Length: 329
Ligand code: NDP
Image (cartoon, rainbow, N blue to C red; front, side, top):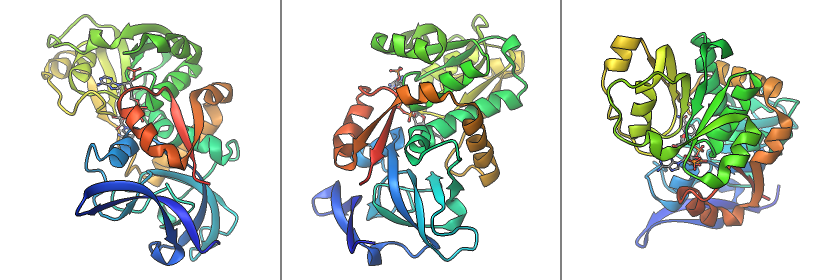
């Protein structure tokens, strides 16, 4: 291992909160059981908030940012992991309370690691990343509720983002009719190529909903929150389900109890960060089994770690499509 290596670090000093590419040494890394040589990380919505300082994501400073990592074990004090194992981490407080993946080496708790499925390279595992693994958790929530394609369409909001793109691809592979909701007309061809059969304008859902509206879909995957989530609930079929994972449109929920008490609609929260290892393993196993690899190739771009600050601003401005994989080397 080289004596120093690159990392994106958030600090706070007299000049305020700042995030920059720095050199770290081995002795500065936390003392966890497994040392990972990282190949790739990713840029998710939460990463963009942390890097730009738009939201106080890093609860401990200094903090190595990056909620995802994929690489190879180079040293292990845990019997569960050996040198040479291909591993990934999603969430578990990375970039919040635990040092994260925007670095060439990281010392990680053995309990956070998941084996990269044989089907994926480290680059592909990060093309999926937290966004794609969260999309799978959302699809599992719909399936566990008993939904099948015969129940009706599934609507996906924030459709051209990371969670939305992978959710559309997965749902169409499982045979569901998918309705995508997007604020950008330029993404329509991309969304159709992933399997969306209809596209609604974001503005159609981002208005004050009546307590109940005409039933339109059996289920929903929501990255947006706020008025959009309220509209989804008001238009979900009797006994349908909305899997809510995001807040790209706001953290509030201006809804009523009517969809719940008059139509038996379920609102299911999705938390990828502290999901159990069992749930994570099920998600990664099913991603390996069912994700359309040709579509995955069209969903991401690989970018250097030095470009993260600019890309983070682009993501929050809504100018990116799909996933960004970060090459930390
Ligand atoms: P992205 O930025 O990749 O995608 C978000 C998409 O939402 C955009 O591409 C855009 O799609 C749409 N959007 C952006 N701004 C707005 C707005 N103001 N109003 C309505 N729609 C908007 O983010 P991710 O896919 O990585 O994450 C999506 C959300 O899910 C985020 O809020 C993130 O924090 C959350 N998340 C939660 C997780 C959990 O564990 N609960 C895990 C992962 C993500 P379009 O242009 O097509 O409309």
